[in-house]
Length: 264
Figure 1 (cartoon, rainbow, N blue to C red):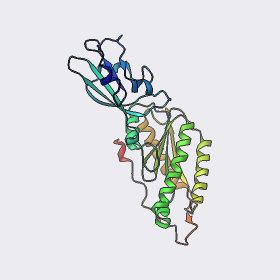
Figure 2: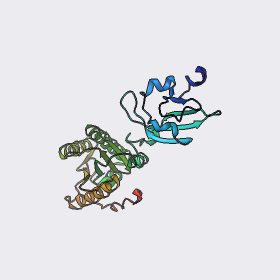
Figure 3: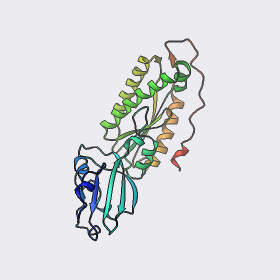
Figure 4: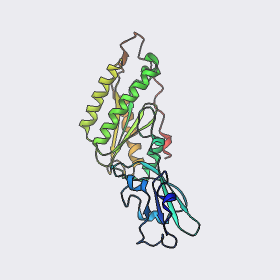
């Protein structure tokens, strides 16, 4: 027997229900509530969801709109043996509030589930100059401008963009990211930085792709990080300078620390 309508159908989150003694049968289809039917297509959760351990599980669940947000699926066994799974969209809790990109926690989740594909690491040249001369509010504007461009670039390649922290960003795609769109993005960013009052600010890029540079996303990130470091060492002397001040913009920064956050 399925739950009564006033209990199950009007739960505030999408939910699935497996009747007692039947939920473990492979041929048993779960009963969706109204919120589930309005949000997810049948089969959005894998068939194995019926046998998951009780408790929360985080995964990407495809919606009727074609999106794949990170969701918390909480499974519980009810008295009598029936099982229920409620689904809560937690994408906003894995989103950087400044740029709107996915954050490092989302990347750590996707490291476990996504195919290697290709990785692009990016950081802003002379970002310290922006903060020191125009202030952190201007620095935030520069970060938002880059976030908007990276989101569009990743979407065109069928991938996702992440802000790792500070001025460090990452794009991951299931297929190769061509050079031309990245160069176009770099040009657009220089123009955006100029409109925001900073001349000569650009973005450096390190690229890696499977299988030539590794068979896991973690290995691709490490290779892209090496490439990024080489690009920054090889680039011409910095020329970033605000158009609103004559302050010397040649003060060197402290360099990029190694990416120990990967846990490798």
